[in-house]
View 1 (cartoon, helix red, strand yellow):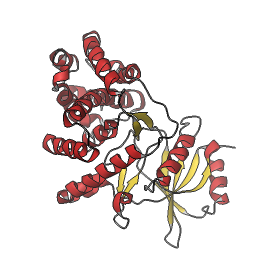
View 2 (view 1 turned 60 degrees about the vertical axis):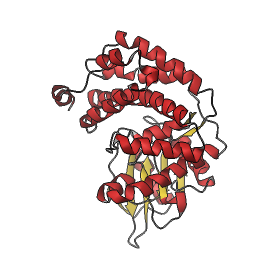
View 3 (view 1 turned 30 degrees about the vertical axis):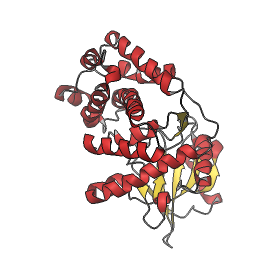
View 4 (view 1 turned 180 degrees about the horizontal axis):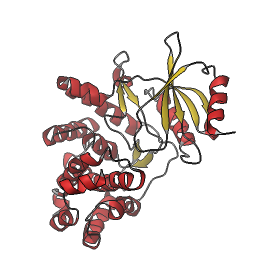
Length: 325
């Protein structure tokens, strides 16, 4: 059975074969999302993740169940063909937190306060069985930039990798929690008719793993897609530390280490997408991501390697951005 026929059969079985279809904007994955609408005004989202290209559907289903058991607003799964990579999901609407904050900046503090509440709730829940990458693996993940970021000086980065691995090893000896990983304002939907943390609809969590609790805070506050000034970032770090009863200095160290790891990797991810698949929409965001990387390296833990590391990962020039787009 070809892909189109399998989708048609799935929709017929779950009673949505006559619905109109509208493709939704995707990101860099091979998954497709399609909004289905019935004449009576009801709607749902078809997630099409062909197993030949994307094997994440079972993980998405398992994480959805875990999140919903915590009374969080992951989309309800209305029908499923996990083996075929097909899910029919509750439609959480179009109101991304990123868009809400851009349209109404005065709402930012209250919304992000609620997001911090959600993150602290996640770390109190018993974690499901997920991978838990060690420090060496996390550093290896960051090395993706060596393959795809133009002008990078790989040999010069060795002292940075050693320093990063040392600090990550210490941080990962602390209590760990679930990280949803792609946790940022474009993957959070605003649901004002719900209460508390349920007002935040969750998307794109199939790659969740176990790591330090700061990981998703880093993802949120060093968001490539949404401009976040340093002053606000530091206020949110302090607020998180206060509510989680974390040591503020220790949390800032963790934030810097995971920001360095994550943002170097994102530089590689964005350039890989452009070079291999023609996904160049994120290339103009490279200066912001590299800025987050530089900010992370300003922490004293990187004082011995910061200058050489930043020289080895040059700022994105206009010529670099033009070549990648």
